[in-house]
Length: 636
Image (cartoon, rainbow, N blue to C red; front, side, top):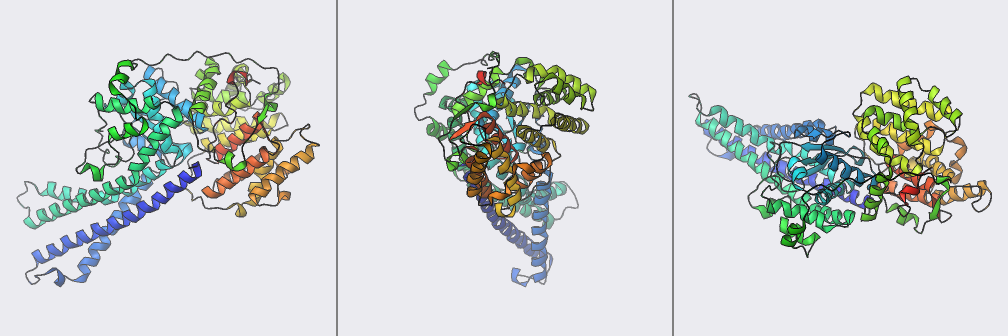
């Protein structure tokens, strides 16, 4: 299944969850009405059967119960509007800063960064649940760009790097396959069902030991508590129905991502062999049980209510030949040594013109969205290893990360660079960018998206004023050299999008036919990047060939796609509008852009990185497209 098909399946599962939720609400409402009717009979000497209870009692009870459940659910959904960050705060997790010096936390961040770059997605925020000694983890967020990955302290302390990578890859599968959004929505919605039980528990606690306690009220509290447990049973059934098979898929994806079944199997083996288990002590363990890597709570009738398959079954599926005793005997106990950074050497040629044959159709190219495999992970690790160590350190603080992004867009000639730096209003930022320039300017376009992704976690933690200062500086730099490149368009659009305040969730239902002009603008952007003077005839002919190929797939008039009208604002506005396309339509858009970029059967570094940048803004993560090239040669 492709990224778009997985996302669509997750949304269908959302509809299944809503249906099951509605059935659960009906069952709880009927149960509450039964209790109300019994109480009415208990307190009224003239009424002896439930049928004799006035209809208004049942209607009022049903309306009040349904309203209470819906209000609690809506309040919880609203409370989770920040997505993954809100969930991490809810469980008391601590954010791991990009500049952490603690070895195990540094190792965790390195693994997350490698996996994110391999997937072409933004680096998730990383959190640790310090009070949890079990081995567990979760991913949370509303979309790919706003994801959070959290692990327990037990996971950090107990697992080797390969095992940790297996767990992180499992969580990345939930992010890329759309499970994460469904899980957060379930977390908010199901809260309303179990809330009724909390009321019953409160009534029983309040009456306990009270001389004025009435037997009927105590019984009512007990009955409501039992009804609440019924709601908990329904909640567990819903979570079990939606989550269990997705765990098998995530385990299989972990092996696909890492090409190392020992990683995920070893992590699962540690859960059963060390006694640490996966049980979570936090009071939200029940509500979040469907989100964790392993079972967070013990349940009765495990085969029916389990959100996760048995550990033995999970190991057997990902690694049928796994031998626990042999694995434990050879297993590492220490973190792997850090990789030494290789030096980035200029190649003496324009990297953007470096091209390779592209043997995929537009359909096959679009299917790359949201995919990760071991080759991509290895490429990401090698790419990170050749980033200069001083630059990597710079990217781990808000001040340094901002300076590095500005330096990334500085022009080559000294005179042009000085003009760009003079255009920056904040002199401190300008001087930091000047200091970072020697490192950043040695990197080619293939490094730009990874550098942006590594910088974003630190930048997102910066004060709002600092974010606005950085965006203003980037715009000043882009416009100061009087020749805005298409690559700069996309970099600035991505940084703008990521540093903007969180926008309200909007439904993605638009069709390309409703956004023809915007689709044409982005098509012109990609087609313009893919033409060269020596590519099969005159430049204009090559440009029109690329536009024609893309327009045919998008089913829009090719006359709408004019590179002459490209401006920073028009590209940014077009990309923002196209984010509202439905998943099916985004798939078509990506196919059309690939058709334009690869119409000559080749893909250049400039084209590949522009496609990845556009995909990043549209929340359609594209992995490295030229992973056959040695990262050490990808210098400017």
